[in-house]
Length: 148
Image 1 (cartoon, rainbow, N blue to C red):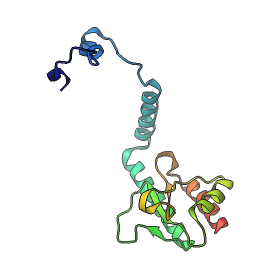
Image 2 (image 1 turned 90 degrees about the vertical axis):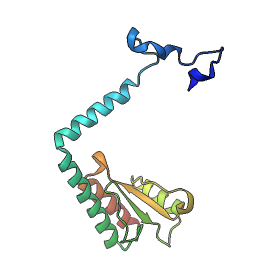
Image 3 (image 1 turned 30 degrees about the horizontal axis):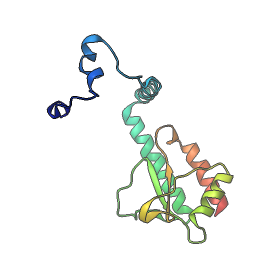
């Protein structure tokens, strides 16, 4: 701990030492982030946790079923347990990731690429929170079908 070092110079913890007693907040609070968390929590609780969980699972299933119907391979394979918030798709052989990404963006669809060993081989479709919406997933599938 910093107290054990007994450093005689600048005390980086000084503003924090009595903050709770002095009712002093020693840095600019991230108020807009906290407001966003408050609003997101309000929306989530209004929907209900179980309803939210079910919506995410249903949208993920619709996404994966639609991609399979288009002949696309998912990553990882069928034996894995996928997340209900994102679907990873193998980039079709007839495209490079850059070509596919450019074509998606030209039609208003933004998906995530990948990093490391999967860079250029897999892209990700997010379906979490407000994006876990059957209509949005169908729009994404329509763009993908058009490009393929």
